[in-house]
Figure 1 (cartoon, rainbow, N blue to C red):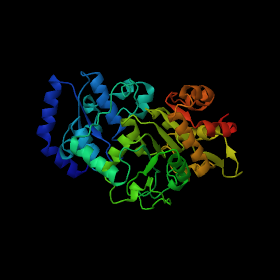
Figure 2: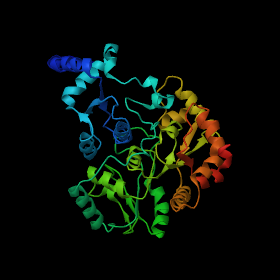
Figure 3: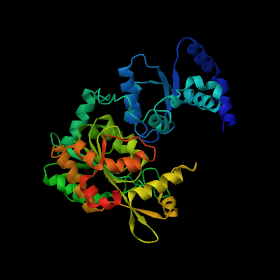
Figure 4: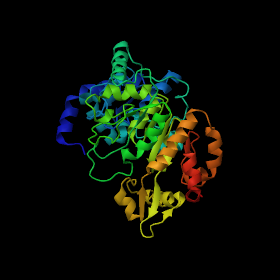
Length: 398
């Protein structure tokens, strides 16, 4: 609801509104607000737009503003060089006004004309790389001399300069001060055994995160708890993602840094079926299992996902927390250390080209067709279930 203060802002911005309409007569353009509160929203969709613009220079231009909160100031600075971004105080009130009335729809892209997977995921941006532009163009973010020097100095400081390293992270309630228990949250300690395996293979590892309070229980100079260090900052978050070999992460926004730098990733403690079609770069998924609260038995992914989708389709907010899942009679079980270690081994083997991504896809095709496709989502050739986990729990996938 637009309050009186908003109307007052609109009054003073009337000349700008008239100017926008005048320009619109001669030149078609859109306006948009970047969902900058979460890093996932200000990474992949922006990168897709920039690459689409490279692919089609005649693409209709967009004038942007940032939201009130910005998850990563360094990304904001970099995107400001690639996009037309006006001050929030000017464009945001106009954006809110225009969104309220259909008369102003000419200023917004009509996503209903896009492919169905784009239309349902758009949230004012294209989250799906349906034109495959990410594979055609190199990452848009370039580091200047000063930035490269700062980044390399940090790697030198922690003993990782010119070393092969991975990043790992989990999603916790601390970052957004959540009161409920999101199903995307997970325990970082369960990843340590897998990280130890990578160290034994010559890798170094950096634990990523922001506003993290709990240090990891791991005493090894090859593993850096950057997330709880005084060095953590928005620039290094991006730079480290650009330099790593691959990322290990829970189902959170930080793993979208892998997409903008075209890095492979392993996503552990994954639970959302709808997310399968949104991944735009190669991903190995390690899903949480579902347990029937009444019987204590694990249930098939087909049963749990179908029940969750049935509930989501009843015009309710999508199920995202443990409380709502419990009301359906299920509990989501985090991946244990052994499962994650096996998944990390699979990731390592894939990086070493010990098996074919496409061959695994053929083995798992029946599951994706009977669960993902059946629930209306597009099958995604960039996603596989961790091979070891899939075979060890084949009864839950059939």
